[in-house]
Image (cartoon, rainbow, N blue to C red; front, top):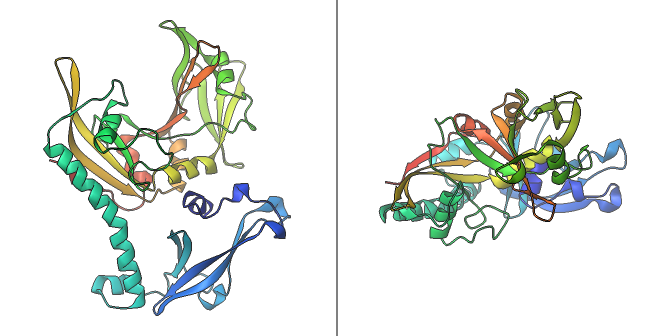
Length: 355
């Protein structure tokens, strides 16, 4: 719930103070068969119990009883709720029965799919026009080439790439069914909890000289220590992902809060097009022929911790020393093995051919 409110821009409990004076009250809606009823929603952190975040829907007892299941979602910057136990939504949607409830959700579904259909049409047009010439070199070439062809400014915003709604991820290999990894998001440690207080400190302690550079390029997993001795362990009590050095003397390195990682996944991949392309080289220049798209929605946040635990989600350090003596950090990048990608999302991913 906290990740939903934060990623949708409604409320961030981390930035909220404790006590009655910091309480926020929003107007939301509870949906029934006869339409939506306005309701006030209180968001607060009490001064007791470390300020555990609370949410309270006024008069909720009029709409739900113990053991009933309710859905909560954000639309148009407002919080909505629906009692799934009592609602006939599935039936009215399937039969297209006209009611205030069906009209609202049909409109919601159409608005949600409109941007995806627009983007899919543009990608199919690009594919029909033939291979895209690479606009740069390296691992980011395909992504930058696709975004350039779609007139998306590189790194112009932190949110999703296409119209602030859909994230684009492009790769040369099949996204699902390949042994390679797909990048999910970048997230730095919580330096206040970490023994190493910066990327430079991690580089100074574990980096190596290679090719005229001093750097730390390595993958960290819960399954085994890498050549630098670095590995992860999950501290379940605190919900921390702890990086440590397994070489003697064993020592802590850095800590990530798992809820922060979940929020990063929710922020970055509310809706994503995973694009695949065939790459070929002609006269020393690389070209990409767009082939297919896998369309995912709704990150399944509890899966992230489980997949960190079984090693299917890993992290790459990409740090090197600058001429000034500081550190340049291109990550840390959290990645998932492509055969397991769809497990991070609710529902069955949609697959589209672009050719």
